[in-house]
Image (cartoon, rainbow, N blue to C red; front, side, top):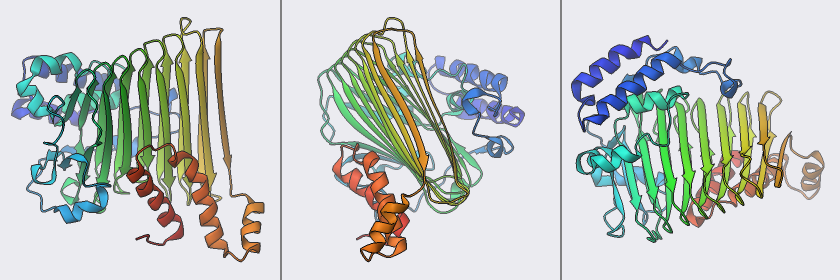
Length: 436
């Protein structure tokens, strides 16, 4: 099924894809060869057992050559959360300077497109691009590395604190019908630095396309990165997102993944706690309806002493939708005094909706505290009866209980504006009432 991409890659490599530093075409070729060897994953692969990518594999998504956009700031505004944030806006994979604003960032903080960084700092990019997002066993990461068109590079110097979030907005419209987009994000937070990133993936209209995004995040000693991902793609689209993180001593990586769009989505978040005293918080929420399918995979590697990890994922499913959560925690023999907790909960609003969940612990140290739990259920009938007995109509009572279920996960969002925005989205989805 990978054969149709061979001609695409050869054409891409000979028509601009091979441009850049001397090492870049070699990296692309290695990645494409690995993709060809691996092929698309199947349900025979343990990590993809509950998610079939046949709808992706059976099609050939073509490279996109975006034309001029007519998108205006007023049309984009509903997706911006807070217009005071620094932001980079990509429309169909191409940066739109007129819609972006990131010149007010602290002078020491370096933010640029990937293409610009390749021109201006090729040696620095070579050191970091592909250093975390290994593609030897990951077909979609290999595909991204072979075809990555553009993306964002962020470098936060030592002890620099960026107070205002950096919002990276990927907008896709009707021009992207049948296309594949492969954005790349590289973040290096040097020791004692702090930054908050919000990635938004937005689909305008009903175009069917493949969004295959990869992020590499290096969190230095004593540094903190808060990383929010909001996926609201077209419900005809396919979304695969992979984030790979490495953490130094006493570092903090806080992730929140929100998935409400796409026909089929897969979100992989992997972090390596490589320095003593590091902490990872991986939280998320997904809302599905119709025949949507969403898969979240997390992998936390405890590779040093006295590290902590916390995970809370919640799903709300209606119609004939299907949710998957697979959370894996590995504790190395050297990682004594590990403290890990993983929780996954799902609420089924329909008899046809289903969830597959698979928490995994691999512990090779003896002085640890690790727990995991998973629950799948329906709305509490006694709570529903109580609300109705107080005069609240049935549909409103269901909506209130659903909203309450979501609140625990949403409360882990530490940006007020984003939390309010996503709370509004949950409320409107299940009450069918627009909040002003």
